[in-house]
Image (cartoon, rainbow, N blue to C red):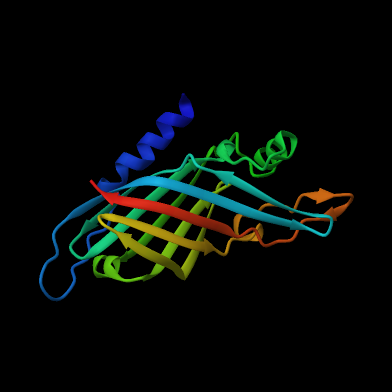
Amino acid sequence: MKHSSVLAVLLFALPAFAPIHAQAGPSQPDQTWLLDQSTLSYHMSHPMHEVDGVSHAARGKGVCHAGQCDFLVAAAVKSFDSGDSNRDLHMIQTSRGAQFPIVSVRLRLPQAALASPTLDCDIDVQFAGNTAHYSHVLFHQAIEGSAHHITGTVPATLTDFKIEAPTFLTIPIKNDIPVRVDMVWKPS
């Protein structure tokens, strides 16, 4: 229950914290977006095996104001499933998931970009008690009616979040843990 309330605060507090940026030219109408569907998956690589952990439990909200959009996506760390409950428990321990139960991603982009097939985003990811910033992350967008289907990969690494690489047979996993994003957003 505690995790749900933290997630709710993150999602519904966004409009109060969204920065207001004036943009030259005609004003664009304010717009609110809700995350309708999501699949987030991380990829872990070790010389002995490859692992993907998947979550369909992300929630998100976006607010566009004065030509600038801020989107917030959040998921419980424990919602990622790799198909091995022991591995998932170790991932939660390694990433300090009990202390920091939510992974959140904040995207910023100009509102005019929402009509483009390619989105160039600045992203802040909060995970394991640390924040990593990624500039110019490209996402692909397909607009189907009012729905915006967004796909892409966040180039995350363990060192970005100060996580010591777990080992298997004394060999650490690779530092790269890219996160694949597949989301459908709809205006509310």
